[in-house]
Image (tube, rainbow, N blue to C red):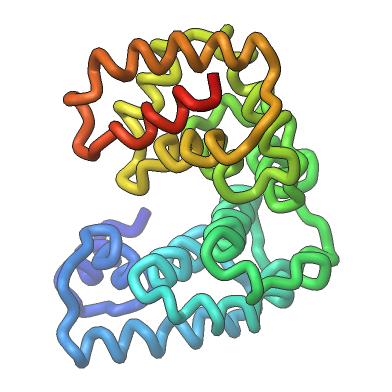
Length: 240
């Protein structure tokens, strides 16, 4: 690492992708001039002949901060897919596609974007490709708590089967599911997953018994949540 280069970025003498990536990571407030500058660099970055880890991380942070910029990304996605230079960068590229698929699926033509498969043997790539297809192996997915929640909520093509397998993999342990809710992301994905559960019928006997036990536990600790769980408890109870 070039220390002088890093200091130049910190001092604002060099304002490249890494400089702005660091600003975005710190969630700093941008002036109008800075916002215009960083958006211009974003557009330039999308047209680069090679895409590094820093490039794609910068792109991800831009789309997170300014959601409307996802459309520009999608337009360039097929070409980006071909010029990304590392598996770590490619995993972030796939994370961006997963984010867009959960929010604006109509923007994506995945068969066209991913026509060229890259880094297929890398586990972090393989699992994300499977999520995008809606057919991930739950036992493999369980290694990534955040990804398993997003998969169950947004990507699975067989929610009932996959959620029952999830419950089997946690050995129908009500405390594990409770922990998933207590330590959930800001999006409260596990709350949304359980609401999704209430809209499905004909669950297995083992699953229904599990939900009965979970409802009892949830009722005891309902005041521990930052949101009201009364409706969830009521609708889960109706399943049993």
